[in-house]
Image (cartoon, rainbow, N blue to C red; front, side):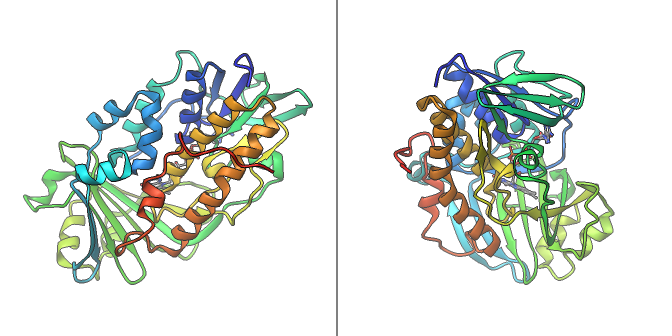
Length: 377
Ligand SMILES: Cc1cc2nc3c(=O)[nH]c(=O)nc-3n(C[C@H](O)[C@H](O)[C@H](O)COP(=O)(O)OP(=O)(O)OC[C@H]3O[C@@H](n4cnc5c(N)ncnc54)[C@H](O)[C@@H]3O)c2cc1C
């Protein structure tokens, strides 16, 4: 694609920042338009698997990520009630060599800051909430809530599960509430009172599960995220504070070790777990979607962010390789949809890494910067 084309990215999330940084490195003129007026430090961690790290290294931020986050010694699957270990994957040099990169657990705010540092100066525009789009054959005009308008040759929607661009292209449709809530807490490790904690554990319960992990190699903060049944969500707020007692009550039937661990929690929050049924409409005209905007997944495989990052890799390669946006989008969707559909399926089943899993190489070993694009209509 001609490098002089103007590419507008809507949403400065994981997928939007990655695709913008990659396209800028390929010489394209890319601007990013984000609704937020500033970025807050939302208290949550994220697991970045080797397949995501392999993409991010092309933004020259791998060293910063490894410095800031933690390479966990191992991923453990343990039973919620008994504590028995059903699976362990050592995250050692051998595993890194097998999958081609390190695994990383990191605070979301730290990841975001590092992704922002990879963006060309002046290319991020905050307080730009996309409202409307006029599409003409050779360009689009984006209209923002602050009154600004922008002409672009291509628009990329990285605007998350509530994507406005998706609604403009294919009609309004609310995300699907899955009947599960995500409860979370971050607290200083000192609150464990000397109790030992493994670097990264998924605790599997009968109708719920939890993840506990550190987000820096200092191991000075604990992150706990639990997925528990939830009857309903009114859908108006994305997240709200959760009384500590309610958080602890979710762990009433847990093994004493897990209960002692979550006792460290001070401030807690809860948000609904939503997704959308599979929908293969990822592009129309000069507009294309990536990440949660086109395929939100349940967070049971720690793969939603990694998939958005993989999308960014393949989309940037397609836009660089093919002159016509429609052709680029066609190749992008053809390459990505089968893989993402499988991620959605596995995430819904919530079985990933509970025991030995033969598809680890398929997911972690994938290199979206190198995978062949030769998919023809
Ligand atoms: C509980 C939980 C735990 C998770 N854990 C993991 C994990 O460990 N590993 C992993 O890989 N994934 C995980 N995920 C999934 C991951 O967080 C998402 O899949 C990922 O953030 C999606 O990235 P994105 O770039 O598509 O969208 P987002 O990161 O949601 O970014 C969207 C951006 O668009 C902006 N925006 C929205 N609307 C507009 C608009 N109209 N105009 C302008 N800007 C707009 C938003 O403000 C936001 O900045 C988890 C998800 C949940 C719910």
